[in-house]
Image 1 (spheres, chains in turn yellow, blue):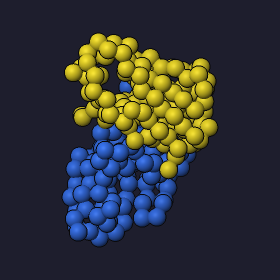
Image 2: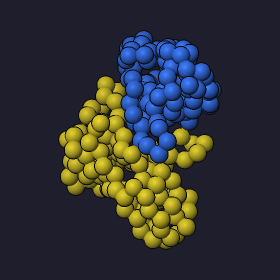
Image 3: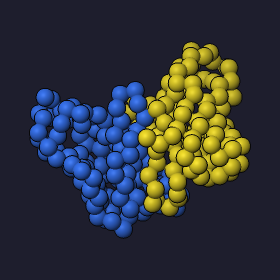
Image 4: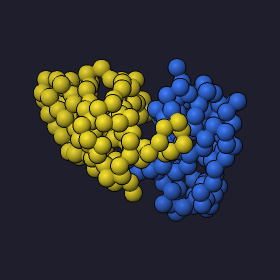
Length: 114
Length: 113
């Protein structure tokens, strides 16, 4: 299994509070991704990174920010959590771009916002 | 906008049966197509990756085919086992963005002993 650790694995918080999810990898892969998974929608890309300090938006980026100060860590922040952000969040990593390398996923963080 | 559809949404088969899972996509300008499995409460496990220039990939009892022109892929599972029970997801990479993936909503497979 690819060395990907997501923390926390579960979190319950209240509307309006800030939340930070962490993805840590030991594979030294350049590309990292944050997805959310919701019933009926499948997985949708939130943000991704193609190197240290290099990030870009995905299809559902509103309300989320990311940071990558080291190759191994990719942080996802909800500045002011809303109930619509209740979801399961997955981090993924990839060694290459251009479609020649598979993405490998962490076990997810289940986030509930009350 | 790329849309990915997987049919059927759920499937139950007896052990030992050969089965086919289907994936269709609307925009044929893809870099690759990937098949994943997801066990309950777990992340996704990459099964097969087919690059746009390829027609199929095989791994053990799994065979995935790709027909870009018709926007279709199939995942063939031979001699199914109860351990194959999981949700199977296909995803296509967006043409100009390398490996940003668009996912289908999956096929939930149950293999009965």
